[in-house]
Length: 220
Image (cartoon, rainbow, N blue to C red; front, side, top):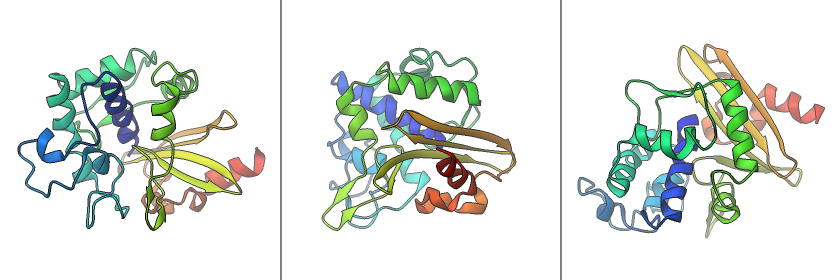
Protein backbone atom coordinates (compact mmCIF):
# COMPACT_ATOMS: atom_id res chain seq x y z
CA UNK A 1 0.00 0.00 0.00
CA UNK A 2 2.83 2.43 0.68
CA UNK A 3 3.82 2.18 -2.98
CA UNK A 4 0.30 3.27 -3.92
CA UNK A 5 0.92 6.64 -2.24
CA UNK A 6 3.92 7.21 -4.53
CA UNK A 7 1.87 6.10 -7.55
CA UNK A 8 -0.81 8.68 -6.79
CA UNK A 9 1.77 11.48 -6.84
CA UNK A 10 3.04 10.29 -10.22
CA UNK A 11 -0.48 10.09 -11.67
CA UNK A 12 -1.45 13.57 -10.49
CA UNK A 13 1.77 15.11 -11.78
CA UNK A 14 1.15 13.55 -15.21
CA UNK A 15 -2.43 14.78 -15.13
CA UNK A 16 -1.22 18.27 -14.25
CA UNK A 17 0.90 18.33 -17.41
CA UNK A 18 -1.95 17.05 -19.57
CA UNK A 19 -0.33 13.65 -20.17
CA UNK A 20 -3.08 11.67 -18.41
CA UNK A 21 -6.82 12.03 -17.83
CA UNK A 22 -7.98 10.36 -14.65
CA UNK A 23 -11.59 10.59 -15.84
CA UNK A 24 -10.77 8.61 -18.99
CA UNK A 25 -12.04 5.02 -19.33
CA UNK A 26 -9.37 2.47 -18.47
CA UNK A 27 -10.17 0.74 -21.78
CA UNK A 28 -8.90 3.84 -23.63
CA UNK A 29 -5.68 3.95 -21.62
CA UNK A 30 -4.84 0.26 -21.56
CA UNK A 31 -5.87 -1.79 -24.64
CA UNK A 32 -5.48 -5.03 -22.66
CA UNK A 33 -8.29 -4.06 -20.28
CA UNK A 34 -11.48 -5.99 -21.06
CA UNK A 35 -13.74 -4.58 -18.36
CA UNK A 36 -16.61 -2.12 -18.86
CA UNK A 37 -16.00 1.41 -20.10
CA UNK A 38 -17.56 2.76 -16.93
CA UNK A 39 -14.32 1.92 -15.09
CA UNK A 40 -12.22 5.09 -15.08
CA UNK A 41 -8.56 5.59 -14.18
CA UNK A 42 -9.53 7.42 -10.99
CA UNK A 43 -11.58 4.39 -9.94
CA UNK A 44 -8.41 2.30 -9.98
CA UNK A 45 -6.57 5.01 -8.04
CA UNK A 46 -9.30 5.12 -5.38
CA UNK A 47 -9.96 1.35 -5.14
CA UNK A 48 -13.54 1.84 -6.36
CA UNK A 49 -13.36 -0.07 -9.67
CA UNK A 50 -15.18 -3.18 -8.46
CA UNK A 51 -18.96 -3.80 -8.50
CA UNK A 52 -20.57 -0.50 -9.59
CA UNK A 53 -17.52 1.67 -10.37
CA UNK A 54 -17.10 4.70 -8.16
CA UNK A 55 -19.50 3.60 -5.41
CA UNK A 56 -17.82 0.95 -3.25
CA UNK A 57 -14.37 0.76 -1.65
CA UNK A 58 -12.62 -2.57 -2.06
CA UNK A 59 -8.88 -2.65 -1.45
CA UNK A 60 -7.68 -4.74 -4.37
CA UNK A 61 -3.99 -4.51 -5.21
CA UNK A 62 -4.30 -6.38 -8.50
CA UNK A 63 -6.71 -3.79 -9.87
CA UNK A 64 -4.58 -0.90 -8.60
CA UNK A 65 -1.57 -2.47 -10.33
CA UNK A 66 -3.26 -1.86 -13.71
CA UNK A 67 -2.09 1.72 -13.26
CA UNK A 68 1.46 0.55 -14.00
CA UNK A 69 0.77 0.13 -17.69
CA UNK A 70 -1.54 3.15 -17.82
CA UNK A 71 1.15 5.46 -16.44
CA UNK A 72 3.78 3.93 -18.72
CA UNK A 73 1.55 4.35 -21.77
CA UNK A 74 0.72 7.95 -20.85
CA UNK A 75 4.34 8.97 -20.32
CA UNK A 76 6.24 6.68 -22.66
CA UNK A 77 8.53 5.77 -19.75
CA UNK A 78 9.08 2.76 -17.53
CA UNK A 79 7.33 2.95 -14.18
CA UNK A 80 10.62 2.80 -12.26
CA UNK A 81 11.90 5.80 -14.23
CA UNK A 82 8.68 7.68 -13.57
CA UNK A 83 9.07 7.20 -9.83
CA UNK A 84 12.63 8.45 -10.01
CA UNK A 85 11.77 11.53 -12.06
CA UNK A 86 8.44 12.46 -10.52
CA UNK A 87 8.96 11.62 -6.83
CA UNK A 88 12.43 10.51 -5.76
CA UNK A 89 14.40 13.40 -7.25
CA UNK A 90 12.07 16.34 -6.51
CA UNK A 91 11.50 15.08 -2.94
CA UNK A 92 15.26 14.44 -2.49
CA UNK A 93 14.74 10.82 -1.49
CA UNK A 94 18.10 9.12 -0.99
CA UNK A 95 17.33 5.51 -0.06
CA UNK A 96 13.97 4.63 -1.63
CA UNK A 97 14.40 1.83 -4.17
CA UNK A 98 12.37 -0.38 -6.48
CA UNK A 99 12.53 -4.11 -5.88
CA UNK A 100 11.83 -7.01 -8.21
CA UNK A 101 8.18 -7.17 -9.12
CA UNK A 102 7.66 -3.41 -8.91
CA UNK A 103 4.17 -2.27 -9.89
CA UNK A 104 1.89 0.65 -9.14
CA UNK A 105 0.64 -1.30 -6.11
CA UNK A 106 3.81 -2.73 -4.58
CA UNK A 107 7.55 -3.07 -4.78
CA UNK A 108 9.17 -0.03 -3.14
CA UNK A 109 11.45 -0.09 -0.13
CA UNK A 110 12.23 3.03 1.87
CA UNK A 111 13.31 4.23 5.30
CA UNK A 112 12.02 6.67 7.89
CA UNK A 113 14.33 9.47 6.76
CA UNK A 114 13.09 9.30 3.17
CA UNK A 115 9.46 9.18 4.23
CA UNK A 116 10.09 12.26 6.36
CA UNK A 117 11.50 13.95 3.25
CA UNK A 118 8.38 12.91 1.32
CA UNK A 119 6.24 14.43 4.07
CA UNK A 120 8.18 17.69 3.84
CA UNK A 121 7.87 17.74 0.04
CA UNK A 122 4.10 17.24 0.22
CA UNK A 123 3.72 19.96 2.84
CA UNK A 124 5.94 22.32 0.88
CA UNK A 125 4.07 21.90 -2.43
CA UNK A 126 7.27 20.65 -4.10
CA UNK A 127 5.47 17.65 -5.58
CA UNK A 128 1.88 18.79 -6.10
CA UNK A 129 0.07 22.09 -6.32
CA UNK A 130 -2.58 22.69 -3.63
CA UNK A 131 -5.56 21.54 -5.76
CA UNK A 132 -4.25 18.10 -6.80
CA UNK A 133 -2.87 17.64 -3.29
CA UNK A 134 -6.34 18.36 -1.90
CA UNK A 135 -7.91 15.81 -4.27
CA UNK A 136 -5.35 13.16 -3.36
CA UNK A 137 -5.92 13.59 0.37
CA UNK A 138 -9.70 13.97 0.41
CA UNK A 139 -12.01 10.99 0.93
CA UNK A 140 -13.83 9.69 -2.14
CA UNK A 141 -17.44 10.85 -2.20
CA UNK A 142 -20.20 8.58 -3.48
CA UNK A 143 -24.01 8.85 -3.47
CA UNK A 144 -23.90 6.68 -0.34
CA UNK A 145 -21.44 8.90 1.51
CA UNK A 146 -17.68 9.14 1.94
CA UNK A 147 -15.31 6.20 1.50
CA UNK A 148 -12.14 5.75 3.59
CA UNK A 149 -9.79 6.35 0.66
CA UNK A 150 -8.70 9.27 -1.49
CA UNK A 151 -6.26 8.75 -4.38
CA UNK A 152 -3.49 6.39 -3.32
CA UNK A 153 -3.96 7.21 0.39
CA UNK A 154 -6.42 6.21 3.06
CA UNK A 155 -8.34 9.26 4.29
CA UNK A 156 -10.52 9.13 7.39
CA UNK A 157 -11.74 11.49 10.09
CA UNK A 158 -11.74 11.31 13.88
CA UNK A 159 -13.01 13.99 16.27
CA UNK A 160 -13.25 16.38 13.34
CA UNK A 161 -9.63 15.88 12.26
CA UNK A 162 -8.51 14.56 8.88
CA UNK A 163 -6.17 11.60 8.98
CA UNK A 164 -4.24 10.68 5.82
CA UNK A 165 -2.27 7.48 5.95
CA UNK A 166 -0.67 4.53 4.21
CA UNK A 167 0.95 1.32 5.33
CA UNK A 168 3.26 -1.31 3.94
CA UNK A 169 3.34 -4.97 4.83
CA UNK A 170 5.33 -8.06 3.92
CA UNK A 171 6.53 -11.07 5.92
CA UNK A 172 9.92 -9.36 6.22
CA UNK A 173 8.98 -5.78 7.09
CA UNK A 174 6.16 -3.33 7.70
CA UNK A 175 5.67 0.43 7.66
CA UNK A 176 3.14 2.95 8.88
CA UNK A 177 2.94 6.50 7.50
CA UNK A 178 0.23 8.35 9.41
CA UNK A 179 -0.33 12.05 8.70
CA UNK A 180 -2.32 14.85 10.30
CA UNK A 181 -1.79 17.31 7.43
CA UNK A 182 -3.96 20.09 8.84
CA UNK A 183 -1.60 20.30 11.83
CA UNK A 184 1.60 19.43 9.98
CA UNK A 185 2.20 16.30 12.07
CA UNK A 186 3.22 12.84 10.93
CA UNK A 187 4.01 9.47 12.49
CA UNK A 188 6.49 7.38 10.49
CA UNK A 189 7.37 3.87 11.66
CA UNK A 190 9.32 1.07 9.96
CA UNK A 191 9.99 -2.32 11.53
CA UNK A 192 11.17 -5.82 10.77
CA UNK A 193 8.29 -8.25 10.34
CA UNK A 194 4.61 -7.42 9.74
CA UNK A 195 3.87 -6.15 13.26
CA UNK A 196 3.10 -2.52 12.36
CA UNK A 197 0.14 -3.46 10.20
CA UNK A 198 -0.93 -7.11 10.13
CA UNK A 199 -2.32 -7.29 13.71
CA UNK A 200 -4.54 -4.28 13.08
CA UNK A 201 -6.08 -5.22 9.70
CA UNK A 202 -5.43 -1.74 8.34
CA UNK A 203 -6.68 -2.55 4.84
CA UNK A 204 -10.21 -2.21 6.24
CA UNK A 205 -9.61 1.53 6.44
CA UNK A 206 -9.60 2.29 10.16
CA UNK A 207 -6.26 3.57 11.52
CA UNK A 208 -7.68 3.68 15.04
CA UNK A 209 -7.28 -0.09 15.14
CA UNK A 210 -3.53 0.56 15.48
CA UNK A 211 -2.15 0.91 19.00
CA UNK A 212 0.68 3.00 17.54
CA UNK A 213 -1.76 5.50 16.04
CA UNK A 214 -3.75 5.67 19.27
CA UNK A 215 -0.60 6.37 21.29
CA UNK A 216 0.40 9.10 18.82
CA UNK A 217 -3.03 10.75 19.00
CA UNK A 218 -3.04 10.66 22.79
CA UNK A 219 0.32 12.40 22.87
CA UNK A 220 -0.46 15.05 20.26
